[in-house]
Image (cartoon, rainbow, N blue to C red; front, side, top):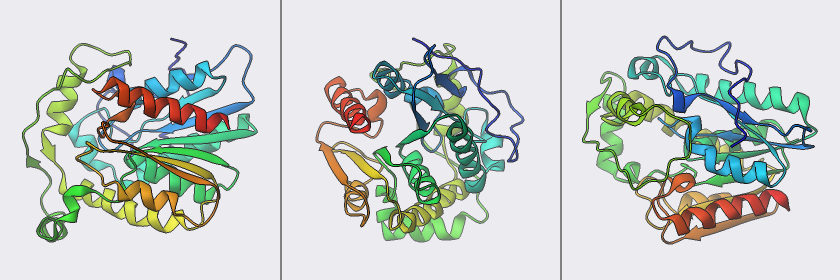
Length: 283
């Protein structure tokens, strides 16, 4: 795997993490010895990390693209850092990465997973130079927030409740492709996925509203992929992307797909999604 972690500091100017970045969460690049004429910037999801996007990175690199994956501030370090960061930090780091890559490449596309799909849409609205993007399970409409009682509770408690303990167990059936330490998953599970963070979830909700508004002006041709087994976001999230007024847009629904399509436990669904992303960006 042609991966390097020698990248620019795209987190500069925003919240600075206090805890070290876990090995799997390091931002990375895959760049050909003879630089490609086209690059792809990959944006990971809420409480996720760059290593989750290694599979699409490898596929796109093998297809001839140079590929970059950034890390949001507060992600892949500690729960305390997560609480101290927010939506403007996450968006700011992604914007730094895109602007940096655009200085080096004439053609730059975007790939976003979950919250990264929202952020990619916002960036595409800000930078019409981005002519094509692929959004994987974009989180414009989140299933937990479809419940009115849940939404009312979130509106109230996000202002004063930092975190709520939830059950989390590692699922070894997912296919991980990143370079990691053996305890990375357990550590990140303990710091992030074992809690619900109401304030951060509210940040995600606010980003989703901003992203929906941004879609109205996004000119980029956009593929959006949804999974039938996705328990986090609705299929409608991808439908509204395909219905945006500008550009040529497509919605691909994969019935067997879960939310974590870039490393899905269903290898058939994973392959279908990643091949679709590659083929869309090659058009």
